[in-house]
Amino acid sequence: MPPKLINTTHPWNGAPPKLIDKRRHLLLDKATPWNATAWSTRTVYPTIPPKVVYERTELGHSLTGLLTAIQDWSEEHQDEVLAARRAYDRRAAAEVEPVRPAGDS
Image (cartoon, rainbow, N blue to C red; front, side, top):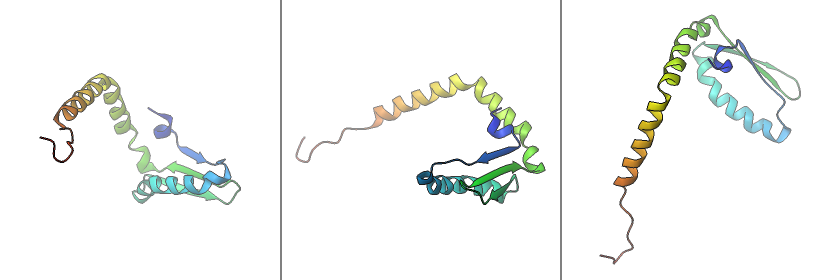
């Protein structure tokens, strides 16, 4: 299981000043659904650079088995999934008709 899903805490800090606003925006956009579902908590420390720590709640920890099963399945079937994607891309590319300039027959 990736550490990001298993570890209890996830600190975020140390971004160069010009990236802080962009990273904060991206981080908040990604984290809000998790916080809203009570799977994690978010603690902001008023430091420079800002420090934000995410911790999974008891409810969040209860997902570990499910997330591990999903990862195990994806690793076991990775080659099949990639082959299916390549086949889809080939079919989609074959279905696209070239754009012809007006007046061409």
